[in-house]
Length: 537
Image 1: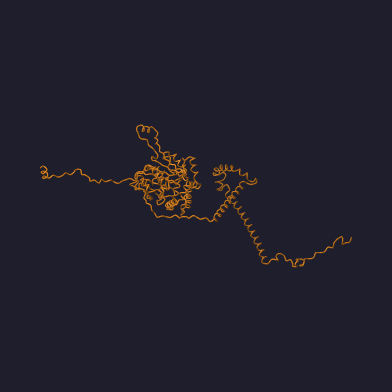
Image 2: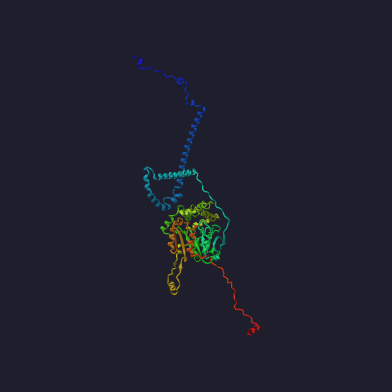
């Protein structure tokens, strides 16, 4: 075997030349960068460099933010989480607040502990549920934004918004003894011909222009009724009262009756929330009243003598917003100004059910959409908010849900209990005094729509339980507005129930006998001497 067969010759490597790097076309290989133009290569290098710098900058900012957050957390722990900090002393484990709510929180935690079964075993429940809550809040926010954005993209015709118009003053006014001016309105027959006088305080967000809506002058003339309505303090053209209460409201009603010449007793009419002033009149000036007519009368929804079932049936008919407004009026009345300025004090007209958070029945909804009612109500609201002051409305809402100063049970007719002791016994034995009665002695009539959701029928049931002597007229299929507003037949039924057969106004004309008056001594014929002689002949 030769050497060539056993081991091949090793050829040393040759250096690369341009010919070795040539392609099929004989062109030399110059690389990728050489195939690009000089401007494109510089732009690519710069873009890669700026991207790298931006990423590095963002990473640095993120790391600094994390460290900054940790530092803030440590500062908060050192300053607020120690034993001497305000939060630990007021809300720590050994604080009074923690002792008061600790038991309730522990019960809620035990009841909700079964939710932890749905979590992985290696996850902390506190951390997991906090993250779930945060994600849920973000999801709802995104969903709400998406729905608003999608609804805004669909063009919908916006309803015409009417602005509130300030009308010139038109009310008659009287000066009360304390110097305040009270505006009033008079309808029906004059004072000297009135067979019955009626005074009607208006409801919330109303004025003297309301009265009994749609009541015809011919019906007032037929029954001989003089109807008087007035603006409550701070409403319409009446001056505000510095220390307003239900007792002062009853006093204002009595002073108004004296100022405009109401002789004898008068009837009081209360509708919806305006009934609280009628209740006050029954309590504080019963000697001036001939009777009371109530339409869907409102009471204090927080009245302590209301049973749990009555309260449940009443509150269950109201919307959540209305319940919230009652809560604010009772606990935080100053916050009502925010909602009032955004609704009826905004300078623009709106719907009454939205402004007052009402839930209306079908017939009530159809009525408020009627152009006649809409025109009437807008004019009434414009007069009510004439002064632009929110304080009277806050006072009115607060009076309804606060302590009235009396109870409806005091209006119940009952015998006066005799005092105990020997002296009172001897007085009862020696004297034959008549038994005295307490409460309101006159008639009380209540009309209640059975489909009323503003003042539910349960309120009238409560009133009838407390005042069993009141005559309740239940109206099937009627709502809060349908029986009182613009119903001629309803108005006639009401007047017939209150005043009986119509007899017209009083006739105060003096009849004069046209025949001449005879003198006490009738004149006699004179007889002359000549006449006498002739007669004798």
